[in-house]
Length: 325
Image 1 (cartoon, rainbow, N blue to C red):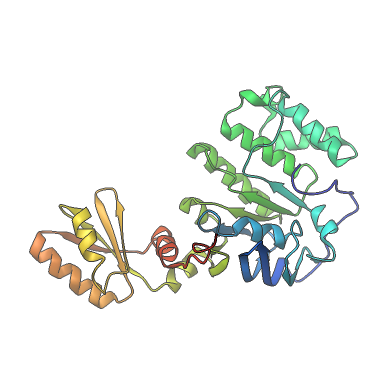
Image 2 (cartoon, rainbow, N blue to C red; image 1 turned 45 degrees about the horizontal axis):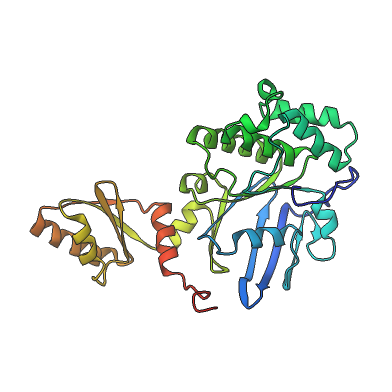
């Protein structure tokens, strides 16, 4: 139901060096497609680690391999001290998996859904576990409501409560806030930080830049390759991009003209302004000020945002699936 077997309560994580996950050289093929290529990374205990990248980039496959839910073709590693290939059964009992698609029963109440999940887990004292989950996720006032009548935000809380029932030490969240309103997304992330503060490691894939900035660490994967990883500040700094905000008339035509200039790496429209980025700060400064004098543009240097960086990474990633049949 949540990607793991029923968890015997005696299963506990092995003590280690503070790492929840430590993997090296993970590879995975599906048919003739090499969907994850030599990925190596580490996740600390109590860390929220975000995975970003285009649809089909291998994010979910990578996350599932790191937690013993999918066997890699090659590579090695540990999750919670267990070998991801030889001891995957033990890992599964310590992992909670929240899929992107809501998969609970809409004709049952919240409490009935959670009780059913607890039965599937074979949990002792399941009623106490259900009550704790309901209280912890703020579901008490809605516990008798039919799930089919819930908004996206409340369904999201139910899904998180269900995958937390057996008290996992690692959470896998596959685009958990897709289609959820901003207030519900904010509340959800507050809950994730509460869980991280209790020592639970969270692996989350997301397309939202504001969510990415709330992660302790990030990894950007494109066409199976890990392009960069680190804190948001580290990821941004490594690209060595300088960015300017440009205001003026006919920005679409201006963007087309700028993209032909060697000093310009990318242009991105943001409302009534254009973000212009390049790796040669001096050359970009000179170009934009020359254009500003000719066209009555207003140009202002700004900090390069995480969104600017990921648009740059996406545009420069090689689509090695594009020529496959």
